Length: 227
Image 1 (tube, rainbow, N blue to C red):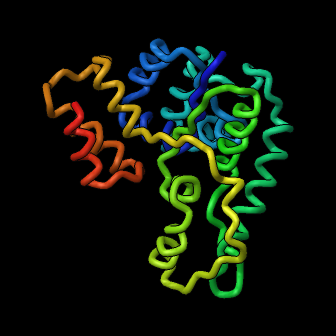
Image 2: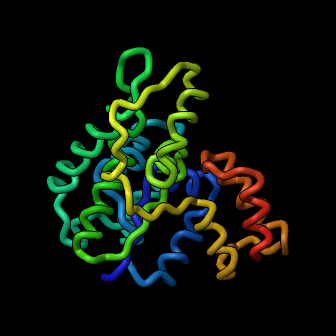
């Protein structure tokens, strides 16, 4: 195993509710590597949804992908949950104390997405090329553009934000992709089941945007120009 994609909950949920899990299976067939989820993410996308009637069907579909080894747990690549938990706790402690608003630290990332960072860090240490599939904007900005995250938080929370410590080193070096990039690849590889010319890509990108993918209309236009 020389490469992997680590999936956060939001990306999997977006693909599930848009009926794109068959396309995910086809992507796995042409990807020379592993599709991984952490125990945190498994609980969020399978264990918890199976207890809620509204989300039970999506939970069953994702459980089937895990049973079929389309999605796999870190143990499949020799990584222990205890190791991921240790790194997750360390990264959450740092991230959730970086920004201060109204005299208290702001909680910016959760266990699920942080566990993806932790697994990525471990795999990188093992010389495994990897990317994290995450749609949530805050997480992506922390990794890709942390200097602008302060302004984003101020707009969202309508309060003055200060930096407790400007050290984003623990969050550098990660590769992030979104469900938007995944559906674009599926479209380019001809594995999307709906065949309706140029409209398909536009429909796919807007579908994942409305399901929580942090992609702007301008970015959608840019991706469509690549086809």
